Length: 388
Image 1 (spheres, helix red, strand yellow):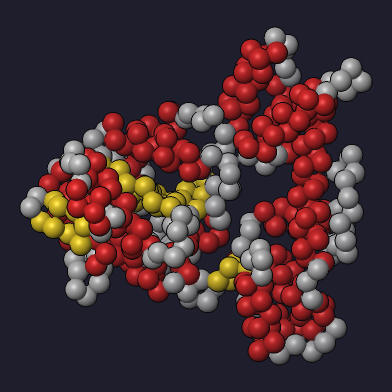
Image 2 (tube, one colour; image 1 turned 45 degrees about the vertical axis):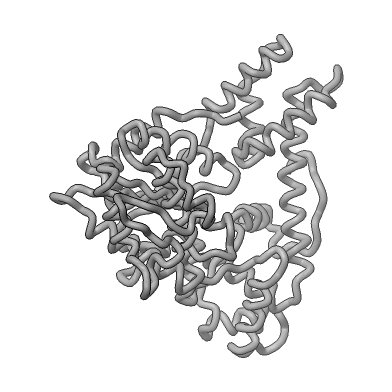
């Protein structure tokens, strides 16, 4: 069930189209939201249609959809698909070549060569599409931070910035860029230094589904059961579920099945949500405590410092030495970091420029919880406690 947010979508669309004078969104909009909180659904089912209604050609691409393909290739294929659809063609060439080429205004574009020495530049392709469709183009790039992990991805981001600048007409943006990510710190690396492709822009948090979503859920529950539901209790449970609809609905389904006279639905729901939250915390603790001492020390340092993390300076090496009980050299720390990157699941993320970050931002909440409880560093999963 998709929870529609038309007001938020229309407001953001207005910003992108330059209708809000104080907004920098026409130069690029960067949205951060935790995983499974409705970010992708909002982009595809709310913001995209709002832009299309305003006459914009919208292409959506998820850089995590196929990690075997480069960001440029994924963007090119998305453009090919949306152009074929917008021009009303059956796209015979797309059917036979798998979207490896498109025909625009009599010009055949080999999408597999976009950005390469023997192909058209991204700006040239977008300029042709813009001229033939007479529409502004919006590129919605989900999980954009993935582009920072390879030279091809870095080049793609630079090409997009160049295309955005070159396509401006009378100072008005013709290429609208919307980039989203599940990790604010990683997304910031696209714009937080003068060497970053979108330096000067800002990352904003995409509003969570919040109370309106819970109220709609409460109404659906009333209709299904004919019983009044406490919205405040549902909101408490939704918050415990990290405002993730899938987890919330799972908890509701279990609670409706297990509720009885001794424990009503709302009380059972909060208990289930607490159990789910503690199970997630215990899972992270199990992963952490299973690591060798050096890897634990490095992950601890990264959790503690976040974006200020410098893995190989003297202070870091002294910290690793103290926590692991053995003198640690930079080469040892580097190898341990690579093991953390290659673990299953991965625990550390590295950009092309050598910046390190947590792979899963939810570990920050887990770390903050243990610090607040004065149980850091954890030694083993403590199991569920009703008051947790």
